[in-house]
Image (tube, rainbow, N blue to C red; front, side, top):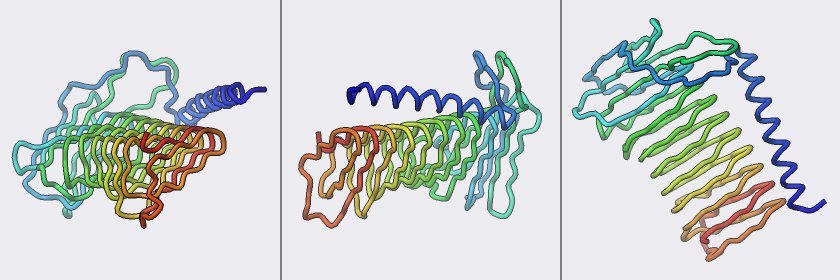
Length: 274
């Protein structure tokens, strides 16, 4: 059996197991459904505005999209769109909490609308945003000082610019244009970063890691069990790369650098400065 055929069979079997795992996961949780043409609610259910600079903002959602945008003032505003009657927004003890939920669906579900949360923040907001989203996407605007902590079951995270992001995702991709520090654990999904400064600790079970421009100020690590690691431009760091099955190509490796990046994949290629 050739090497290419072995890789193909491994990937095919892995995709089958992933699909079965996703279906089993949602079936056990009671959320298993074949949904067609589901879209996002446009029914505004809550709109609140605050002058307080909350030390922490938490968004909990069982099924909904979340957008964090720049406010046109120094106030914080929350808008919740929902077809349900139970979303809540509570502010107390310096913390803001937004909660939305979705009625469970079993079987075939047509034209279901998921919730949507829009959070508007002042451009220099720097406190922690905690996101716990079972199903749905997260979109982040451009914030130089924003700190994100996210727990996602199924959905993508896309963003322009944040300071720090710490994510744990089961099924979904992480795509950020600019981030200073990144800590990520993904079961199944890709990471794509245009520019990353300072530090990264990424651990993927199945998925690719791609970084266009990388600069570090402390030792970091990128790892995927099954997938490629590609870093287009990395300067001033030593890359310790290893793959069990695949090719490794690291150009302009700075062996004198005090900063080390460990890059490891069990099945896939590693390319740096290519």
